[in-house]
Length: 329
Image 1: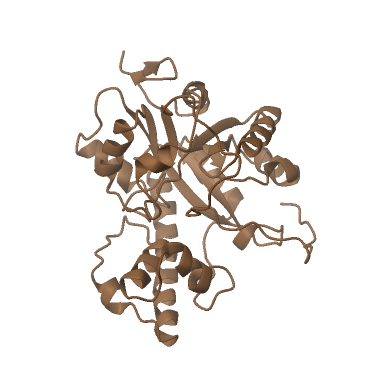
Image 2 (image 1 turned 60 degrees about the vertical axis):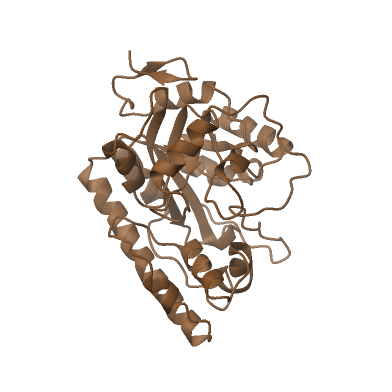
């Protein structure tokens, strides 16, 4: 990717995932959004179990849902194996990969988050790639716990109550919740702001794939890669063009913390570059219920049809629909 010289006077964007700050010019959904293509469960750094997330989404009127846990398809596999997908709902296999950009492009924490949709959940090479990512996450998790202990903010007792298996992806929100339980933080945002965020005392750099490798892995597994919550899209055509050249197929346009001008600006970029305009809540559960997150998004029904048309593997096999409710023919 082309390097852009860093401007020390240019402020870096803040973390947005758990940001509870009111939006000055919010999107007012014309109806409950039928689509949510960005969610997290307890198999990575969300609060809800996969089954609980499905139940909450259906209660809010969602008919096309993607579980995009970090570096794992375990949540998707869990709901499918349990037969927990009700009639009228399509659950798309999804993933989110926090990809490292090694040169200074002025990006927050030096990362681009790559979403993947419609990968073959039985693709062994892709699962091996995700397993490698999860292993790096575990190393970072353990180093963070060690560093907190050195700072006199031990969370060993709280971490001991966790029982992750090899398919679970550990992350900093899990550490933040342990800090809250230990009385060392008042909220996830507080934990990130004082301890876990970039440049803070307990921050440990991430290791893992870069964006080019993440996009290639998703494509090789039959999926469509999309760039998540990149509000900077209108100002960074250089980044997007390079990603499109290596296979990027979508751009998250409808995002819970985007105000109306941001949605319009990012949508124009997606149209200009021929990218599928995906969207979702990015729900984790630390700042409110799923219903509260869902009430802040509007993903047009046509997005589902666009997504399914562009997924190389043709997911979901045997499904047909009008972009609003996907049902078996």
